[in-house]
Image (cartoon, rainbow, N blue to C red; front, side):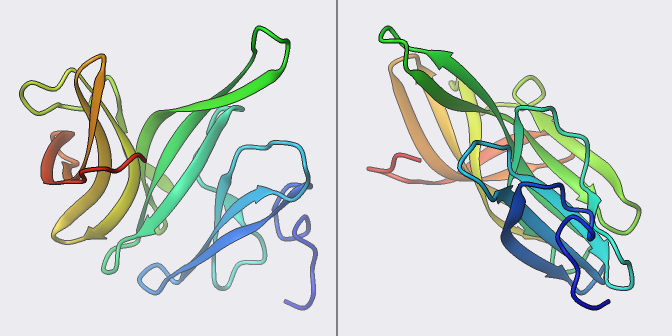
Length: 184
């Protein structure tokens, strides 16, 4: 393959590698990219089979959507990742403010090159008494399940963080352990 630029390998100009993952099951390399410059760009995920010359984008995220926290399944050709939707606004002093909110959790098949599952706020089944929830990070992925940290709110003034199992077939979030004194 020789020495090639990121651009020649299919990574857009202005991006650099943030994280490199390898799926022995799919014989694929997954890279998480970030802005290689001072200006903000959404994080992106790309993959390539080991015999391929170029990386291929994972999914089709929106212009202001970052693909973050990729996690490979150890026995299946799957990568799970979180998506955050970013926004920019001006405060009272005219200063630009950047914020992000959880958009979705996605499951992508590295063998077929297709998205196989997407969990959004609207499709997430919440535990009893919870009025709002979001996934902050992925912490485990195996045949035992997909495990995440999540913010759970019972009212507008309080958020508790937990380690939870996410049932992908029902999009049900099942708390396992609380994370007291944690802000994610």
